Length: 113
Image (cartoon, rainbow, N blue to C red; front, top):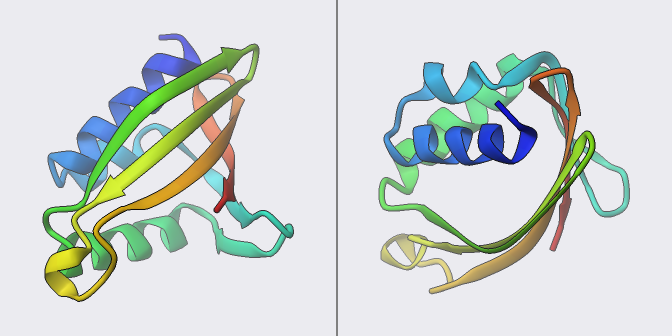
């Protein structure tokens, strides 16, 4: 699978609330950082805990990807996230995510929002 396909498969698994399948696309040592370089999640166990909580607290969360760029080991997604409003959050959250790959696994995610 190409990196762009792996990102899409991970998003679809998240939408299906299939945490094991979703995390199967992530490296064990995956790191998620914000735009300032602060580590938001360090390792697959941290991602699992965060995603499990999010799936429970926001069961209707949905990621639309109007634009995706793939270049080598990088995939850049424009995300439009809905599903927070029911729990008092905004109707729409927009962000850009930069995925970096190690082989066929997501190794790093940079969240720009």
